[in-house]
Amino acid sequence: MRAPLCLLLLVAHAVDMLPLNRRKKQVGAGQGGNCTGCVICSEENGCSTCQQRLFLFIRREGIRQYGKCVHDCPPGYFGIRGQEVNRCKKCGATCESCFSQDFCIQCKRRFYLYKGKCLPTCPPGTTAQQSTRECQEECELGPWGSWSPCTYHGKTCGSAWGLETRVREASRAGQEEAAACQVLSESRKCSIQRPCPGERSPGQKKGRREQRPRKDRKPDRKPPR
Image 1 (cartoon, rainbow, N blue to C red):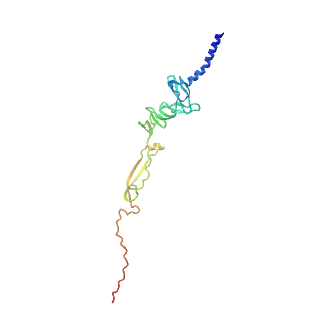
Image 2 (image 1 turned 60 degrees about the vertical axis):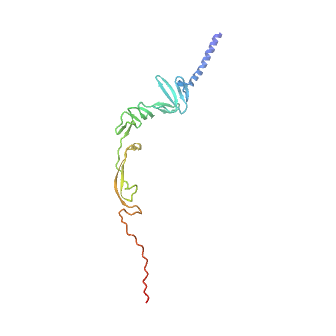
Image 3 (image 1 turned 90 degrees about the vertical axis):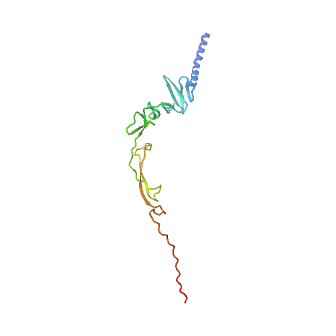
């Protein structure tokens, strides 16, 4: 009778040790020896729960997956915060990097970025920029503006001739897009023909010197008789 009783005690002790072994596995080093920032970590799957403000990034290798807690999601992923866990979610198939699922920042090869979308070709009214892989809207120039005041070296007086300028700007809506358009301007010769305050006119001749006022002559004295 003592042998079966000892066997039962050994089985009961082994059952009590199972949760302890599982807890040790949860807080172990995990694959690659990195459980930094993890709340729960296992050797087989890495992190499954992260500390606050960290994102859970799950890397898949075939049928296996391994979790890691990161401060910033790697390229090709964006961070999304939830009530229970913050996760790194993969960008769209055509995005190299993205801000969210619906807004790309950089596109993969053979695609062009246009208003947060990655397109195979740029839409009408835009031009494909090969250097940046972006679609830039074509410039639509507005009417010419009014002529500026006629000036010569920044002054509106003091010379017979000067220059006046007018500008033709882009009429597109959107400050960022309009800034990329080239602003056209033209200048022409104009007449000033007026002196600055306190100066003589360029065509004005110098007058005679002002004569000093004569002193009153004394009356001639009669010679004495």
